[in-house]
Image (cartoon, rainbow, N blue to C red; front, side, top):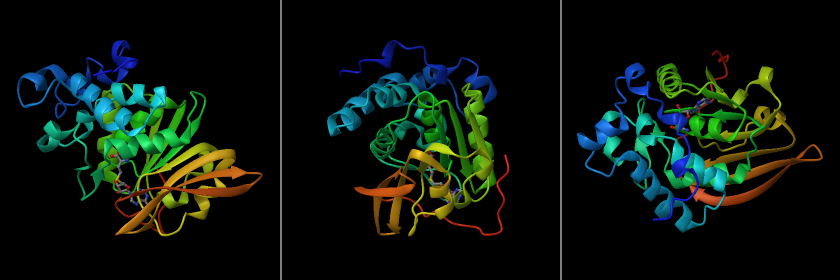
Length: 253
Ligand code: SAH
């Protein structure tokens, strides 16, 4: 097991007050000794990073460090927590899913985020990707259409000490015009067509990663704005829940 880098870094994401503010979450140590029939969460993360990410070619040290730090088990519903670091997506509330760690890492790596970047995520879900983005960028805006998921993600992120993420409830296909332009946009749900509003909210040189396709055939598309035009490159095949537009929506935090 390699796990170089962040293993010694102070894990902001495991703030000691996390358990008190979020009784669902439990502390990593308590879980290691009780409900967890797996190594303690830090060791499980280390194994996840080595065997699922590094071994498959994820090499950006900032992405690997962030994935070592963020406690994925805090974002997973209690019945699935023992599987939090396994190599597959998991169910969350409202029939949605928290994505497979490898797919999350692929998407994050493609965006080449800097600590100065402002990022939009569409599809907050559990808040796990928002937490990773918060580790990698200066400011994160994330939109979720299900109010209960948005509330839960807000609570989890606050309990873990994240102060640079704002969660909005509404239709992410509209983006957040008031907070644009963005350096990067990560879309966590699949669409047949890239929403034009999202393209228009990227700054020059801005990047977007988005799963495009139908429910049984999707591919990640990486888009960069060059001289005012989107340049698309096709990436890995993936499977995401659908991006569902609501024309009557307005986005509130
Ligand atoms: N990134 C999430 C996984 C998200 S699953 C995580 O880390 O857990 C995709 C999410 O997109 C779901 O929660 C779904 O409700 C949401 N979604 C689908 N269509 C949407 C839309 N138009 N606007 C905002 N969120 C949407």
